[in-house]
Image 1 (cartoon, rainbow, N blue to C red):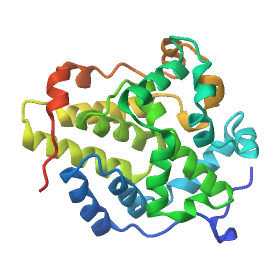
Image 2 (cartoon, helix red, strand yellow):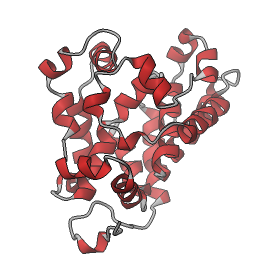
Image 3 (cartoon, rainbow, N blue to C red):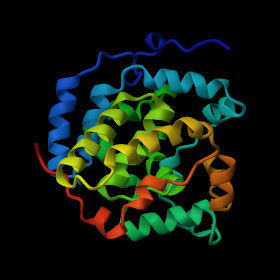
Image 4 (cartoon, helix red, strand yellow):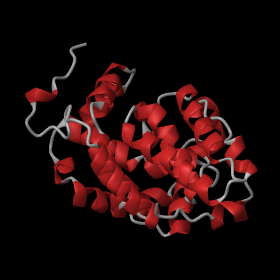
Length: 253
C-alpha cells in the first residue's frame, strides 16, 4: 500500500512538525495547577505530536477494515453527542458503560472537541490526517471505559500512558509520567509510577484500538470486548483505594 505523504496536503494537521518541549513544559505546569484545565492537555499534545498522526493513519490504512473506516470518515464526535443513539445500547454493553460514564461525570464529547479547537483550529480541516486526529481526540473517554481507569489524577495519568503505547504520541507519555511524578511528590505511598508503567505495558499488549469500528464496538458486551481486545485489568491502579485516588490533587511545581 502506498504510504501517505503529509507534504502533499497543505492542510495536514501537524505533519512532521518539530517538537516543542518548552511549550509542553509550560502547559504541563498550568495543568498540574488545575487538572480540569483540559485546554493545557491539547497544548501539550500540539507541542509534542511529532509524526504520530501520519504514523497512525498509515497503520490504520494497512489494517483489515481500516481503509473502509478512512473512506467512510465517520465523525465519532457526532455519534457520541447523539443522545438517542447512545440510549439504544443495552445495559452491560460498551455503549451503555460509555453513556453512564459521561453522564455520571457531567461530560460531553463536544466539550472536549471545543477545547481542542481552541488550541488548533486546523483539526477541523477536511483531509484524512485531520480526520484521524479528531478520531484520536474523540476516543479518549471511550478508552477510559475500556481500560477501567477513572477521571481522578492517577486514572488520567494511566489512560494517557496506555494511549502513548497505542499512538506513539510523545504528549501522552509526557503527561502520564509527569503526572505520576507529581502524584508521588504529593503522596509517596501511592504507587503512581508503577501504575502508569503498568498502563503503558497494557497499551502495548492490547489490540490496536485506533482501528476499531466503534459503532459496532458499542453494541458489544463490555467484558467480552475487553477480552477480545486483550485489555488487562489495571491491578496497580485498583490497588489504591478509591477514596485515596479521589483525594489526589496535583500541585504546581
